[in-house]
Structures are given as C-alpha cells and as structure tokens.
Length: 130
Image 1: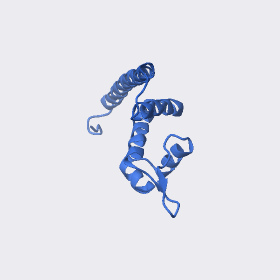
Image 2: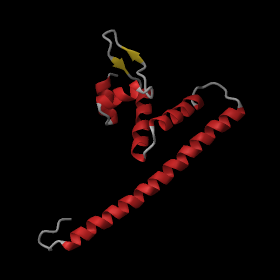
Image 3: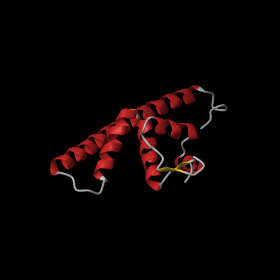
Image 4: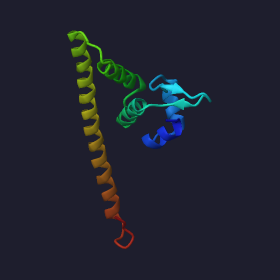
C-alpha cells in the first residue's frame, strides 16, 4: 500500500511517516516503478508500535531498540537460548517501563481532572459547563 493509505490506517501524518523512515525506524518494503513508497502489513504494524510508544515518552533510540529485539525474536530462525532470554528480558523491561509510564499518566490525568473540577466549582452555576 502507498503512504497515504498507511497514514489513514495508522492516524500518522505523511510527514511523521517520512520522519520515521529517515530515522531508520520503518523503511518501506518496496518502491513502485514510479518511485512511490510501498508498505506491507508488517510495516504498518511497526508504525503502530511506534505510535503507541510515542505518547509514553519513549525516545527514538528506545523505539529502535525495542523494534530490533522484536525483529530478532520474530526472525523465524532458531536463536541461541542465551540470546532468546536476553531479548525476552528486553521486552519485559519495556513492558514494565510502559506500565510505569501509564501509571504516571493516570496520576497526571487525575490531577488535571481535579484542577478542572476546582475551576468548575468556582464558576457561577449558570455559566458552569460539564
């Protein structure tokens, strides 16, 4: 599929997708004869991983590290036991970091909601909105 369809499916802008290509996070699987970027379902899945990591504050380098670990685990070939355990350990660390960041965001959201409620309470009843 072309970049426009990928953008529509992922909710990412064309500029963002091109940026991720420039940084090496997601490289189109092919180019059309006319030079258009062509993406596969695997490419879309990678972009979705990145899209989910971004609001949690993961850096591009952390995204690259996670994607490399996932790529290696999904390579289809046998992995030495030590390498497999190391890669799974990296995935566990990312999962724990993601859980902590989600918890932090929930705390921030609760504080923001409290603040909004405080402001709402200060407004006269006829102008208050919910």
